Amino acid sequence: MLRSWPALLAWGAGLIHLAIGAAVARADGDGNAIMLLAPMLVVGAAEIAWGVAVLRAGRIRGGRAAAVGAIIAVLMGAVALVGGAPVIAVGTSSALAIASGAMAARMREAGVARTGKGEGPVRASRSRAAGVAVGALLVAALAMPGLAQTDAAKNGDPHDHGVGADLPLVDPHAHH
Image 1: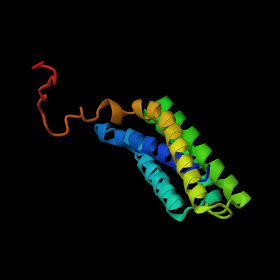
Image 2: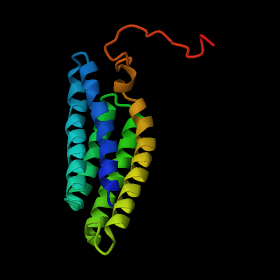
Image 3: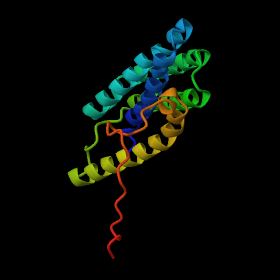
């Protein structure tokens, strides 16, 4: 059930790192902020790509490398703090990255095999689906507060989706 969690945790950390890195667009020519925040874009993209590779393969890929990557992500987060990154966002992404890297290294070390060996296909599918659902809920609950602290959340699109006008409210009970 936990086999997909390192990938999901990496996605959560990656999304926050991308949001922190997106603050480069708001740096207004501040060279120091750009140098300190831009690497977060690379870290976030790498975490998301690794998560996709793990879920696609159905097994942990590069467990030790994931642990080293998590340490690098935490160090880059500390550097981003100097560039003005929000503490809560960096702390949340660091916790997600460390949990992902530690779980990946541990699962790889323990030799966790692909899902489905020794289980019936229906049971394996249900177990996998339940694990992904619970993991996704956990990552969403942990990542959202961190994302909310970033410039991406503060300066994002007001969600008008290109309409640009308020839509009229239709009361279905107006004629009754």
